[in-house]
Image (cartoon, rainbow, N blue to C red):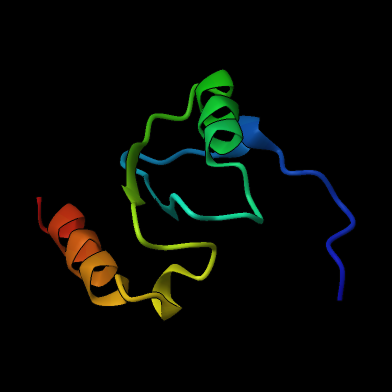
Amino acid sequence: MAFAGKVAYENIYASETLVITGSKDNTVENERVYELLDSKKIVFTKIELSESGHLVFESPQALEAVKRILEFIKR
């Protein structure tokens, strides 16, 4: 099932947003994601894992990713 609509960024509200990516991602250009979120005035914290690609949770750093998410939630 394909997504046919556009994201209505003006309707997004989040007090804290975490964006976790892999620096070896060849599917998504991480910097473009950050630029998009900035342009839409969405405040976020980014974590970029150096040894991960697009499938962060199937990478050698999967456990590190989960730990970082839990740290973010606990703060």
